[in-house]
Length: 138
Image 1 (tube, one colour):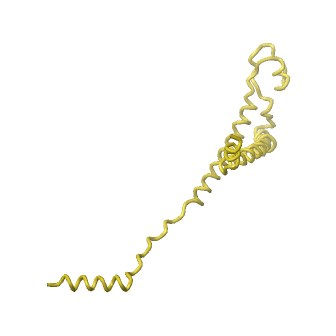
Image 2 (cartoon, one colour; image 1 turned 180 degrees about the horizontal axis):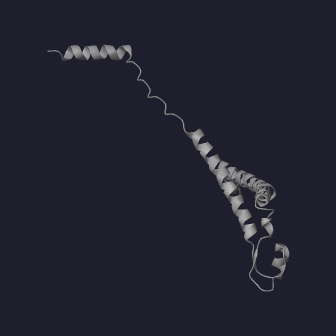
Image 3 (cartoon, rainbow, N blue to C red; image 1 turned 135 degrees about the vertical axis):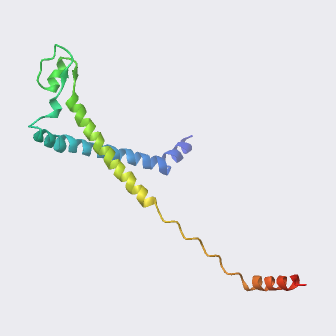
């Protein structure tokens, strides 16, 4: 059983999948930082200095805080600013994955090889055809 597991774990597909998950996780953190630290502050500045990370709707009358962290400690809140940030994050990842898959599909497309020209018949085949044709004559 240990041998079977070793063969399974070291098979190319499993190793490739593991590498893909690790790289995907790292890529996700890069995109998350890009969205939180670069894109959303630029959007916030364009819209008049808005900080989307602190936008929320209180779902309880007990919530009186003005920032999201304290508001979540006081009760239920709908953190729509954080949600918007995650949506932008997802859109960037989805677009980049689309570009990667599109590039891979372009690389995979190859022009079909031209049909192989049949080799000319050998000397013995030509002689046999001549003999057959001579015998077929009345």
